[in-house]
Image (tube, rainbow, N blue to C red; front, side, top):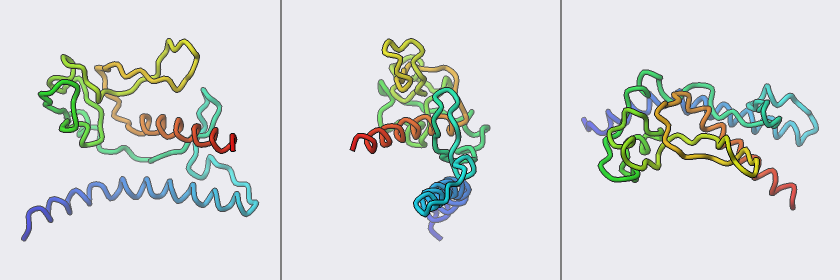
Length: 163
């Protein structure tokens, strides 16, 4: 038996729940869009969208479950030897941000740290992101993904309104 097949099968079983949750949210958004085209106005909050109270806009819900169990996310770390956590970074390959447990990230200029909203943006733009290294790690990756998705959605909506 091929060991690679066994390992890939185990990984698939671990990720199946993650794929299901993300796919379900996508299907909800597609269904809502079709109903909107047909003239049936449904409540978006029931169909994969949530209200961002601070900005008073709807943003998509990418997933309902965490990317991985929090116990696993707390013990993951990279041991990068290059400055800036290049593409060989174990955290980056896993789709995670570097944590305080990472060997060289606190010393070197890590480019894979958690993005944080800039509190002191001069132009008042809430989408300004400060990539300063954060010693804490947010195990709820949905917060990070929904921020990116909401910023991308707003840009798309602005482009649609301009046309």
